[in-house]
Length: 111
Length: 115
Image (cartoon, rainbow over all chains, first blue to last red):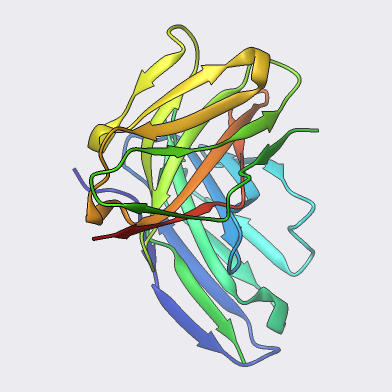
């Protein structure tokens, strides 16, 4: 049983560059979530998919952020024109019904 | 609006001692409640959950939590702490929407275990 996987685990980028993260959920899970976690804080909800439909977006998800789940399987989160404030851990979680299972996260550092 | 408060930022306990981590929530309906643990540089691991029914729930690694509606609390307990329990602990409440729920997390409690 493979859990939620995320790629890459670490990403260092320069301010103004675009970055894309990938999340592969647990195979039978139809729900997929993205969260952001900054140092010393709990994760904050960004967006949620059921199958390929993006059903909820947080106000934290500015216009520079976009997420997709094209075939209802893996998902990508893209950040355009990165800013230093985007430096954080980006966590993906999946669920079928009930509890959410989290991946190891992608740590983004914007220099 | 829902919120989760973990009053203790840091807690230090001796190995073998008992542990209680506090969590208070604010939510208009019956909440879905969770405790997760996070080791440095790692993702979140689910310890236990409460959806309904018995208010005392058992989780993995010997943890338990009790839902007290009158106190809006969901405190995490362990009778005897092991050094490997040192980690960050997060309480979360699920805000149910049409098709799923987004988790609202507290800021976490960092547990240090001393010999």
